[in-house]
Length: 194
Length: 302
Image 1 (spheres, rainbow over the protein chains, first blue to last red):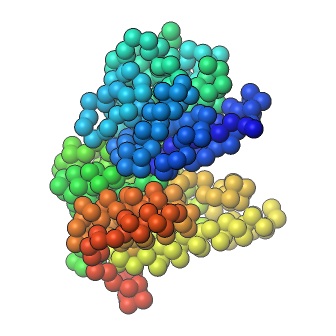
Image 2 (cartoon, helix red, strand yellow):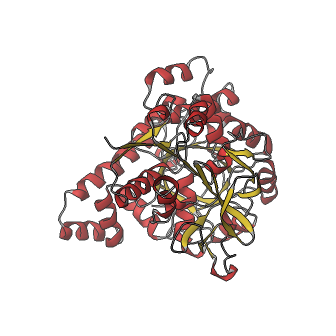
Image 3 (cartoon, rainbow over the protein chains, first blue to last red):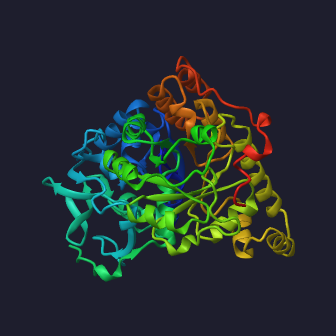
């Protein structure tokens, strides 16, 4: 039996996460089956879970409406790994300072949406991430930042003095898009090198 | 702890950043809006982005005359109103409208045949912009020519402002069928196809090898109901643009929400049945077959 990986697929950058999980699993000699999570009932079977980027307002609305939200909370409560990127990070945080997003509180951190500006301010850069051997090619797209972390939250990366990657127990959150990088480094870190 | 990265290393407006933005819209609904009030309704309904324009396609169609970029002041108001991305439409080949939209902070520019084309020979050189572009296409050759010019997203042209999904389906099927045909071709045949359709050979190869367009592909033009949106997802689209379909409906709030949910549940008939039930009448609509040739928008800018 291999691992079952879920990618929250209500909206956003789904297939790239599936590819990155498969690459990370192959690197670690693990067999993995990726399932799209668009309704309730899928998450309870998953060993690991990714919540991708997209629009946090849309993703937050659809995971609550579809009954997926409580299942993600149980997944994390059981100590199983979750990687939440960009909009996923916003939904997974404790507080987004925005009533349009209903946060799940899986990462003890406050975040600020679109902290780096509009699309014209989006950028690529190379980023040092705690736990990654090489600088990571990070794409920031209308990216959020972490403004405040609780005790027990490890800061994995900063950019220009802003926190952009954190770990809180089984949950890794990034403000950038590791699934666009063509490198599985962050997926390795979140799922296979805990 | 990591070190702050040198700010000079930041790369803006790269293909990855532009196409990446387009990918974040996947599985979502982009809604046409003309003012901040409609923008608020769209965001509350769960839209992934709004398209700010001066009039929705059905009204542009009714009114006739020259259709242009929206007033920048109105677009700014919409940008202030919502937290989701704001897109704006420029005329085909109208580099200056596109520059103005980029300057005021629009997140994506739609070089759109729904507005009156400014240039009947050339599209905008989109690679020179930091903002990503979306362009319409009716077939694969057209799509690849736009991608070669720098488009980060392709949408079907459909037949805007009609509420008749027929042409969007036709374009999407056409693109998919041509990709399947390319997959069965030898490399010489692909090169010949590329020449015939004025598409770069490298892009033709890439599309044939991956079995899909190199950028995301949305549906647009004539989508009026949740079932229409689900149909376009069924045909392999990555997401949906809705124009007059929502604000031409009896209850725009309910229709907007229903279309967002239908895109998510496109392959689940039971959920779709629930979503479509009791949302009130859709926009009145106009069958494509009844449109005289000169009123069709999809043939503009090939």
